[in-house]
Length: 124
Image (cartoon, rainbow, N blue to C red; front, side, top):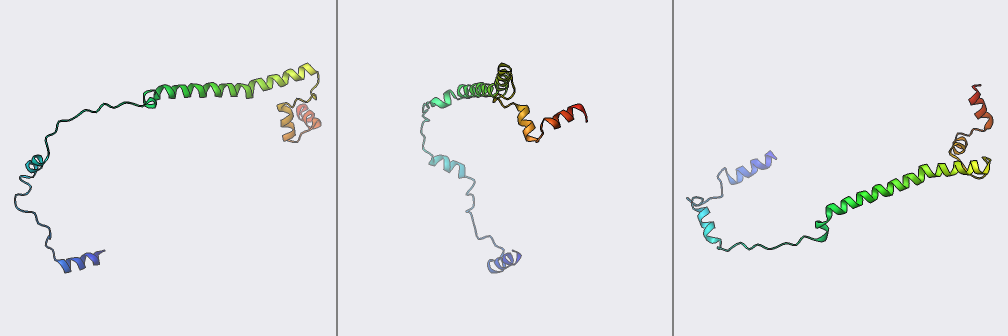
């Protein structure tokens, strides 16, 4: 980079090639103002779109719907399923009636049979 600058300085010299006439910027603002045409400002009425007018209400409605939907899904997935399974087990009188409870899923996952569970509970 320094070599390039040195080459340019040797070739062109240190003089500034750009020149401005004397007093050019003294009258510059007045010349620009003379060139501007005198027009009166016109106010253009703007209509807001439907979405921009009701954006806050739509956001609030979306949040409420999301909360209601999430609550319904949560209740259906957690509370009612376990209560229905417990009701089925009590109503049928046996645990092997086809209802697969969380405890049975856990026992299958850890590969424990009844003998292992009894040994664990008795502390042997």
